[in-house]
Image (cartoon, rainbow, N blue to C red; front, side):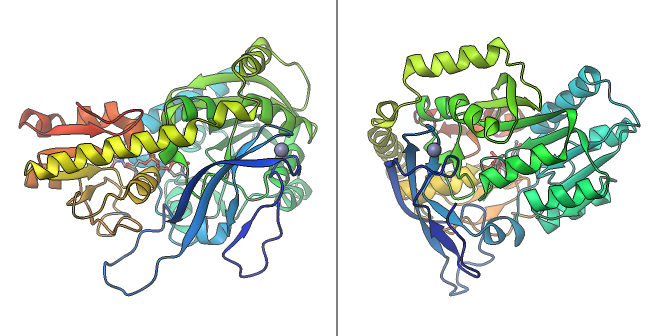
Length: 417
Ligand code: DWN
Ligand code: ZN
């Protein structure tokens, strides 16, 4: 990891974030884009939005897929970070089931200790609190951390690191379970983060980590999940090498449909690697996911999708249709800013997250409104930027559809449903 000069907004990596190797081949360039979760508060505040290069590369030594620019984590996650996990019922159900499964599997009780890295608004740890199991959340984002404390989830306002793990260990804190959902791909110091997990975990503890999987990202052209918060796009091959470097073992994986296709990783101090891992690594070798060739067509596939979507939207606009969008999602920011979808096409974006309402999408500055606006305005079409929650959104917006409204789903191929 390149040194982040104090006060620098970003650095361009010269070597691999995981293995430090210098065989880094860029296979996708998305230009420069604004920060996906930095929502302007007004259209004409005259403030220039910072933009950063967004390019994706493959490491020839450890096969890690990664972006080449590291934006200062303070800029990305501390200041006014607007993401609150609890605005998705599907995510809450998913998290509750995960917690209950682990309480069962690890026989957790009042003598146990569960830590979550990037615990956000307490969406997951609250399930352990309800079961009388001691927890600690760690999250650098003030708003979500305060929301967690409010519902009785003790949360430390901090970035997790090797140093913080040492401090907690000195305070006799070691975890039976460490959760880390949608954060391993987000950290500027990937090795320091994993080393910290190794220091904080009990010898017989388990780290249960969720992260998007690179295979569905490439196969389903989920290029909009590429933005500056997502530094790494993991394969099991790359993850296995990363954990072993810190005396940890990826012993089991589960495939999840959430967020366009994710992995749940079970990581321990003792090595007993199961078939779910060895089979997946063999699968990746067979498909060439551990080699650059697998990625070389991705740029052309992305360009094709961008043209198809832009053509569809402009054809509908030309026919006099009105179009809004659903989900002021970070992935939505990548989509609208790399395809060039502005206020001339999308009248407004709706989102249930009250911390996003009244603000604007990065770059294109499309206004964000409450979801009620869909029935108030009844636009002809709604582009689903949060396509990873399509089923939940379709169900929720049944009335809008009954009145004739139609949804446009952009990924893996633009279609009207
Ligand atoms: O990795 C990350 C993933 C886990 O979440 C973070 N870096 C940031 C964030 O990415 P995202 O913003 O693309 O994620 P979501 O969860 O797909 O965002 C969905 C958006 O849609 C949120 O703003 C909430 C909103 N929403 C809504 O308004 N009504 C979501 C659902 C399910 C709904 O019913
Ligand atoms: Zn590498």
